[in-house]
Amino acid sequence: MSETERWLSVEEIAAHLGVSKETIYRWLERKKVPAHRVGRLWKFKASEVDDWIKNGGAVESDHE
Image (cartoon, rainbow, N blue to C red; front, side, top):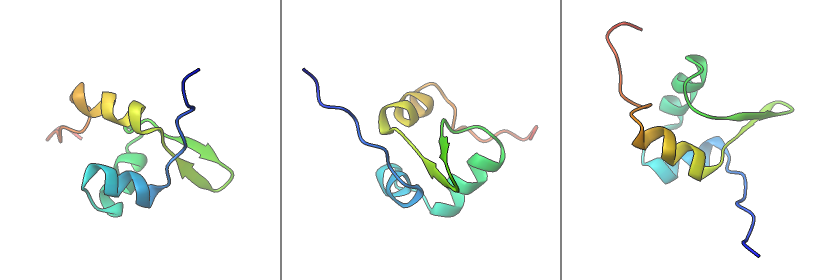
């Protein structure tokens, strides 16, 4: 059986990606980054965010 991937906090996903917490919050405001709300907290699966990055989700656009 495979191990269940754990949920990461804003701080942990920022460290995982090597970006600031402010960048994560900016992506959340734009409803871009794959995230899940748990009460008042945002949680992330590293595999979902990694796939989003690989597919160009983090590319900044002048049209936003």
